[in-house]
Every structure is written in C-alpha cells, then in structure tokens.
Image 1: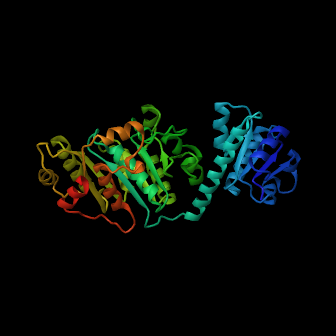
Image 2 (image 1 turned 90 degrees about the horizontal axis):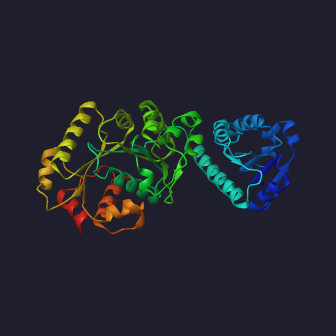
Image 3 (image 1 turned 135 degrees about the horizontal axis):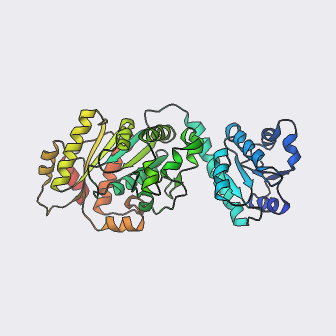
Length: 395
C-alpha cells in the first residue's frame, strides 16, 4: 500500500520520503494532475495514501485549491506543500486545507515528523467518521466551576480529564475556558501550537475534522484545547463560539471536560447550557463556602444545574474553624468529594504532572479517584455519606 504520493517534488526530497516510508511511495510528475480525474483520481489509484506532497513544480495557488478538494473528498489523506517557511504562507495554507508546509531541503527528521503527524491525523479522522454525527446519550460534558479563584479548579479539571483519558472508556478532551488567564497547558506541562481562538475561527469552527488538527495531544491520550495566549485574544472569543465548540466536541469525544474562569461569565453560562455534569468547587473557608451556596442558588434559579451535580470541597483542614457539618449546613446540600490540604498538590502543579497520571497514593489522589469514579460508565451521581467520604480521603 502506498503511504506517500509525491507530485512535482525534487529527487532529493523524494528520496527522503521514500526512506521514511520504507519505500511505500509513488512519485509522479506534475503532468499527472492534468490527466483524467486529476489529483483525486491519482489518490484513488494509489490506494488513498496518508500523505500527498505537492512540490515546487505545482504553483501555490493550484496547490491550495487541490488541498481543499482533498480535504473534503479524501479526509484521511494529508496534503503537504513544499515551499519556503513563512508565517503568512503557513496561515493561508492551513486555511486552504494544507496540513504541513515543508522546505525543499528538509532533513530526515522533519520528513519523519510530517509522516508522524499525518498518521495521527488519519487515525483521528477515521475515528471521527466512525463516531457518527448524532449526539449519543453516553457522552458527557463536565463543567468544573467555582465562585472564586484559588480553589484548585484547574488541578481538579486536569486530573479528572487525565483520569478519564487513561481509563480507556472513550476519547477525552479538556477545554480551557478561562479565556483570559487559563493555565491548563501549564498544569499539563504542554507547549501548545494552537489555542482556544484558533478552534473557533476559520474552517475549524464548522469542520470537526479540521478542528481536531488544532488540538494538543497529552501523553495520557488526552486532547487539549489550550487557553488563549493573551487576555486580548481570549476576549475576542464569544459565548456563542464557545457553545458551538462544545457542541462539536461533544459529538466527537465521549468526555468533554471544561475548566472555567471563577464566577459566572457568559462563557461559563453557555458551557453549563451544554453540560451533563457540574463539578462545583470551593475551598474550606467562610467566604468560599458562602460563595458556593450563592452560586448554586443562582444556577438553580436559572435552571442550569444538570442532573450530574458534584459538590467538591478542596484544601479541607480538620484544624480549621469550620467542620464538614458546618459546610453542609451552609451549602444546604451534602458534599460529594472532600479533598484534604496536602503538599503533593503544589509539587504536582509546579512539575505539570497530574496526580492521577503519576500513580500517587496521596490522600488527594484518592479523593480525585472518587470523583473520577462518579464519571465512569454506570457510575451515576452517587451520593456518599460523610463518613464514607472522609474515609476515602483520609486513609
């Protein structure tokens, strides 16, 4: 089976692609594009290769047009254009449907990387075509929210997302919806190429196959929509765009975890309209607990509390002035998960290594496992008693 189809590519680069693909390559001249059926016919004759490389002999304008046709008709085939590296050219190429731009003198490492990315994209697109287009009842959108900052919301979001990805129950994506100061990527030790604004503009906003190419992959298998690079860029993302993004992701992934900004912004409210689960968090102090009660009351009045509601207290300390009974009385509802204050969390945050990835046996990791268990198939929104919760978090 042909893995690479090159058209109008120089001999040296053809040789490097042939080596990287173990000889699974078909090299054609640019005149093949004018034969009956054009490029799409050549792709079919080659057995739908993962990569089509259009060389300098193919004018860029034509290469971009062909890439758009391939993107629609042969979604598991990636088009690579051979051209000098240039940011403006790269952006125009991506919008046209090109998946990589490669210099004519690219080395073996660059060529191998192109083939690797194309393979990942082919698998992702194949999975997307198998997933169907209708919303499925076993898909869940989990929104993690809190009335104020500094309560460990991103820690819980990233651990929950990594835990779901590692559980092997379905593809999982996390969305950093703190549009101004999101730090999900930092918490996962990632350096994303794309961020939230990239996923809501251009072809990615209406084509789930293109959207997947803008996601960052974590070693756990988790996909990540990283936070904006700057507050200004984040402010340009509207609540309506967020709604469309979450809707699209919920069709493509079994689990969508949304890490929100503190409070109830328009973006958070839009996410809650799509949510099947709400993880509402607070720290164990008077302002935090009162804020938790107020936010819960507001969401109930708005009809935005989904069936899967999970109340979480973080940084619990038995030496504090508040007891668990005090907290539950103030909130007016039983707590579902209590996470104690430990030194393991700051270390995890600073190193970008989530506790549920590192296999930690810390008390917080056990509490996070309890929260994770509530999201797994057939778990439902279980309501543990206070004794059971404390026991799970303090063994």
